[in-house]
Structures are given as structure tokens and as C-alpha cells.
Amino acid sequence: MVAGASLAAIYFQMHRGNLRWPSMASYNLCKSDTGRRLASWSVVPVETSESNFLRRVAAAVVWIAAAMNAAALSTAQAGETPSWPGVAQTGHFGQSEVPFPLLDENRPNAPIPNATPGAEYFDLDQYVRSQPSLPESSSEAYYWQVLPDSLIYKSYLAGAKESRMAAKIINIRDQSTFWDATVGGRVGLFRYGTGRRVRPEGFQLDIEGSAQLRLDLQEEVDVQSVDFRGGIPLTFGRGPFQTKFGYYHLSSHVGDEFLLKNPNFNRLNFAQDLLVLGQSIYLTDKLRIYGEVAWGFYTIISEPWEFQFGVDYAPARPTGPAGAPFFAFNAFLRQEVNFGGNMVFQAGWAWRGDENARLLRVGLHYYNGESSQFSFFNNFEEQVGVGVWYDF
Image 1: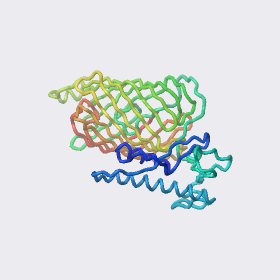
Image 2 (image 1 turned 120 degrees about the horizontal axis):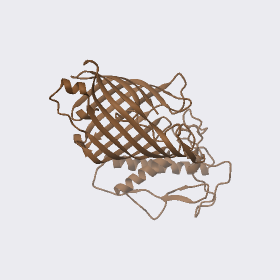
Image 3 (image 1 turned 135 degrees about the vertical axis):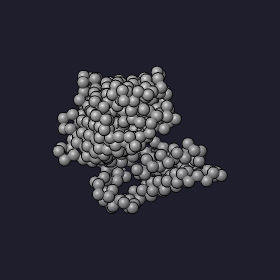
Image 4 (image 1 turned 90 degrees about the horizontal axis):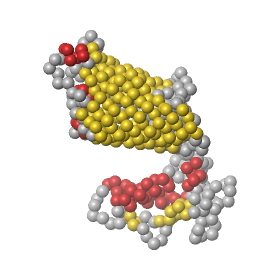
């Protein structure tokens, strides 16, 4: 953590132009497997007239991290175990059984080029390997698979336009009570990668499709509108990182019953064909952040650009009957509404399957923004309700 914080803060400061390279190094980070020096620098703040709080905080982090590294090195040379706040003399962080790997006790330390004889150093590789919460890359072999059981790039839990199986009972303020349902899914066609069901790695071609309809429960359960979506995403995953590039089509249609009861309604032929690029990162097994950008090369009514980002927290491994909590947030920004859009919050209980790693969720739903039915894309909605979701 110390080394990671140092590197991140130093990069931030250099990018801002607040650091410079001196001629003399103040501390070293060395790699034990090869003895090759990874970095050798000192951190010197450059005086600027700009009083920026974030820059001062980043500079403070750099200096604190450098001081802690130097203290660890000095303590190691004296043959003692570091004793920092939160680190016991046993080398454990809090209640976890994570040793503080200042030295590799299983093999001789590799020499440091141009270093003082007998000096020890911080083993960054061993420290990273010792962290149980860090999602690591698999060493499994890649092989071809047809119709794999799981997805490499999971659908966004709170994404309003994702293809899945779902049903929600929602109340929209100043309108009515609706049954919003999504009938569809997303499955893998081909994979060249590992065979794991839980966060597999490799390359995978998927296909998705869904009908996203709205029924008005106070108007004889009339079909008010339906959006159709279909797409072909190509995904790649390794370790905590997943990438998606693909194509999807979406078109919106108004129900016959709604048109008969609202003859003056101006029906819109909303349609779009888009290329999409997404990136997700697992911070832990259960916690993921993501971002996505899409560009429409063919649009009717809609505009080309849209962006979305969010956070998912859900069980990553089989839960059994007990289940586990989940929560999700998604923000979806679209050019046709001046880069407004909507935000969605969901929270509740989830179950991860034993055989196929699929996810069943039950919980509360809150939506605020422009309509999730794109036939009414410019209408504001505040939705409150409950739902059930099944993700492939």
C-alpha cells in the first residue's frame, strides 16, 4: 500500500508539473526476482503561486510515503520488525493474517546494483502476492469453448437498458403505477480463455437481446411502450480488468392501446445503432466500478453520444440458500437530453448460482431522470418500487 500510494501520488504530481527529477536518489524500490532497480528518485516540490488543496494533499502523501519507506529500510537494517500504527509486531494488518514482507526469508536477497553492501530493501513483489483481497490473474491455460456457461464482462446491475430477465412494480410520481419488465438475456457464444465460471479470463464473443416493456396497471394493464435491444459484444478479461467493445441496436415503439386512448400523441420513431467501448475493474471480488462510452453511427431522433458509469457490489461466489446483500448505482448520460439522463439506485438481497454463477436479485429500486422508455425520452420520471432481476 505504501509503495502503491507513493507511485500514484508521484505520478499525479509530475503530471501537474509540481515535481522534478533531482540528481541524487533518496530511496529505492527493487525487484527481488531479478535484482533490477525499478525506480530511484527523490521528491522535491516546486514552488508555485497556485494554492491548490489537492496538490498539497498529494505532495504530503508523497513525503509521508517516502518517510515510511525510509523508516522501514532503516528498521530492517537494524534487524527489527517495523511497528507502524495499525501494524502489530507480528507483522499483521488488523485482524488479517497478512505478513509485512520486508525481507524474503526463503531465499537470499538479490543484489542491488550500485547499492551499499549489506543493505536490504522492500520486496514489492512479495508484498503484492501477500494481499488476499487483491484479484490476481489466473495461470490457467486458455482453450476454445463453445457456448460457455458464464460471461467475462458482466452486465451492469443498475443499468436501465441492459438485456436480462427482470420485473419491477414502480410508481411514477404524477403519472401512474406501472409494471416494467425486461424479457431477454445475454449469453456467450465462443470463448478462448479459462474454464472458470467465476470471473473467467480470456476473449469471449457474446450475443444479447431483450424486449423492455411497460404495462400501465391503472389502465387495464395496457402496453404503453416497448424498447427492443439487440447486440454483439466482444469482451476480454484478465485479473481484475475487463474490456468490452461491441455493437448494439435499440428502437422504441408505442403500444396500440396507448395510441387509441391518446390519439393526439406525437409518436416518435426513436432508433439508434451504436458502437460501444466499456471498461470495468474489480476492486475486490465483490466490488466493481465501470465506465462506458457509446457512439451512434446511425440515429433517428436520438443523438450520437452517450456515457454511463457506476458501481456494483454483489456476491462473486456461490451463496447457497442464505444469499448475500447487494447494491448498485448507475448514471446514464445522453446527448439528446443535453447530457442529462438518469441515475439508478438498487439495493437488496442476491443469490449466486452454484453451477453457472448466474445472479438472482430481489430489492428496492429508485430511478430519477429522463424516461427509461425512449418513446418518452424527453419526459422526466421519478420511479420508486421493488423488483426482481436475473442476470446471466
